[in-house]
Length: 280
Image (cartoon, rainbow, N blue to C red; front, top):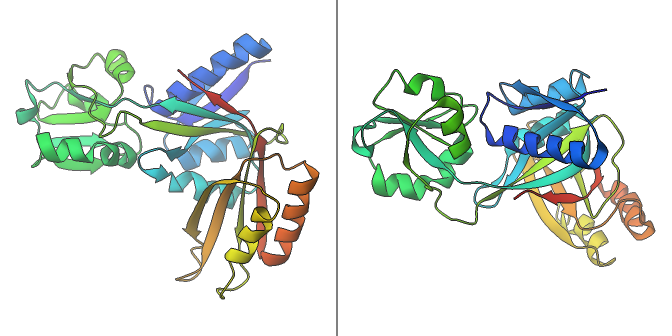
């Protein structure tokens, strides 16, 4: 049976590159055949897998320069059914794509908000007067560049090849050490691994509402590799807390911490334990 993998489209996105890398890994390691299913947004990518329209979803969760991808976190909390199977770490190298003769001829630059932010210093230096327009993905606007000689887009070199577009500058990300972490999710139970991701909401906005839960991990010598707050969207000042720990949830001392965390939480959601797969 072939495995379907949903990802943020259209063709040429970094999410597609991560999905392809994971599909290749499944083919080599598991002998699985895969096919990719692009969706217009991260939310729709996750929803498709939650609804059973795809077996797996590959979505960005964190960038080394710009931090967490809020759409992924918010949607995962809302859906409540998906479990992380694997984490992928993909190097990101941005390029300026355009049919214009030079950078000075470009009036508008399109890309995903994360990509625009990751290149903000370069844009301020080399294209200070250009209008920046956010899109759902890095490749959404590429089909228009051939018709508009004053438009540019921030995307990958791979996307330039796919859409047969010139690269006017590369790399343009502000820092060379630019990596994005992706999660592979499905309706299946998590397989276990070196990392566990979870989220919880506090029952009330009171002193110690966050420090007490964090102390549960500290006293058991469990390292937290990430903590992120997101608004609950119910009331100003109410937050959810997303946490990554470097341990497997099935280990007795981790399970004891999670059992105790329930007493300090209004809602606790464990998204699974998994390993991290680097992509060259």
